[in-house]
Length: 466
Ligand SMILES: *Cc1c(COP(=O)(O)O)cnc(C)c1O
Image (cartoon, rainbow, N blue to C red; front, side, top):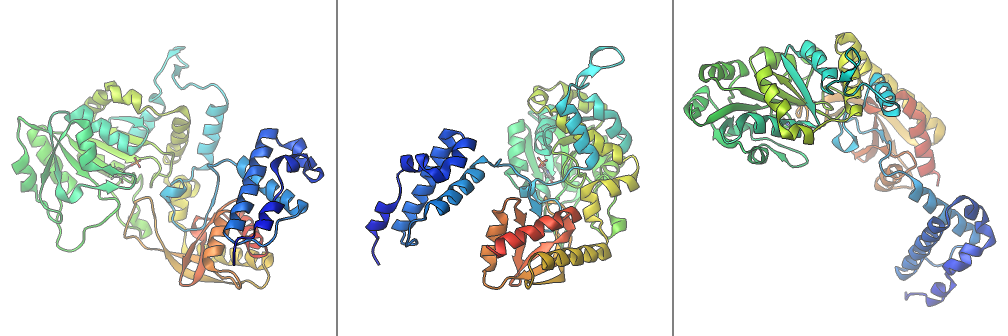
């Protein structure tokens, strides 16, 4: 088959379309420049399809109208948009990690919409500090003397090392030279901070004596421990527990810096989840400075939280990088509201979406899956769908080997490939993100709110009955 040049000649001119009767409603609603741009785009696509020989007729005026309307709709959508997470991955880094709790959203709305006490002390009527809002709360929850917040945990680690260990050696086990997604690598952060990396031990085994032999009263600035939050070394392994490392630190007057990454505020082991170092436990066991993310297991906004001894935190608060890593009022509002829930653990588990989803009982998930399946059957009669048990993950580089038994609705569409369905759902008005496994398209209910079930069912209807 050859390119059909007669088809090309039938493609209307932009100006013709701009003046045509059928497009009248669009001319009234859409700015001229946008309309012209989108007409051009639609015509270009048609031209390309003719050249690619995937098109054997030119759309009539009606069809052009709907193509152009859709194109305008797409162009007018925000790029950063809400999606329905049906992957079952609770802390999905690509989908924005932790969802905020209702209280945090409300707090953000309040300070974003109006003026606030961000740096204003209501008692004295004079300047206050933006860090005061959460410092006391963090100290109370973690048992630390002092606390501060920066943009994210990568910034926190860079700030800590810059303030405490610049020009000095920082001793770290070879088993803890972590890389987190998005190019956070401990050795590179170290270099940026001006600290000098002093690796000890091996990938699988590091002993207390390895640290001890590396400590030099002249050159050593700190001992660094990094929680291997996104991988596990199994088998013939050994690492030095925090209390022992803290003993060594005390002996040589060296600060113990502990990057725990995932920021667990409560002990997950009673809920049959992997043990994660909690912030309070890390402080109790002798870490002088602890840093973690706000939007991993804590379930709050993206932030880097630093807690620990006042003398080290004071160095950081005065450091010029602190201004560069300064958090905004919306983050602080969300963080304060989230942390307040932790004053009552039951409340935290009920209200913080990350905790609620991680701790959801299997019976509840099964019930949810049947509800979703029913909605889907109503919206798309005849669609082959059923409830199944599946294994999910925590995500966000947290609890890497933790299997989370969950329930999914498994869909086997007739007359549409799984890949095409997956793509159509992801490009829908409210994108629905699921996954393909065992020749089925899976919607995991762990990460879905019941309020989203209708949205999901409608998305499926749109994509399968087109
Ligand atoms: C996630 C993580 C980081 C990076 O935290 P961000 O808040 O994403 O910047 C650093 N260290 C560890 C151990 C982590 O798990």
